[in-house]
Length: 185
Image (cartoon, rainbow, N blue to C red; front, top):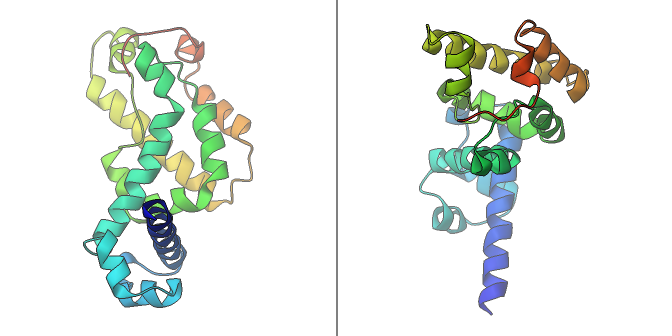
């Protein structure tokens, strides 16, 4: 009995999240109401409030889900203490989950850079410990803008081509992408 209720709850939450993502493609978050979501999801408001505090809590749940998926992509590297700088994995994930990434960016979560990890120790080595915060900001902002543009253009380029673009921006620092183990993430 409990398993059936858990399945039903997960299905309701999934439907609510899906409807919000769909609505966000044409509206801003502040233009969407709980009633809009419930009507479109064919669920009661009580179902919504049993799972989320409000619409912003729902948006945060979607953000957390995407961030967890991205963290999972690099879980082995983090647990083993190295950074391959293999952004191909990320680009493949983006192309497979375009709608969620568009939603993530539309909600403005990219300003917090929660899904991009930067190897601080590797940056210190390559930039002689100078101006690391600036290098980090440049990299994260550049990567974010490239991904946003790629999504905006319908992901016409392949993930492999996008990875080549990132690598080409770091010519002269080829060892960053050589897959050599390094400390930190």
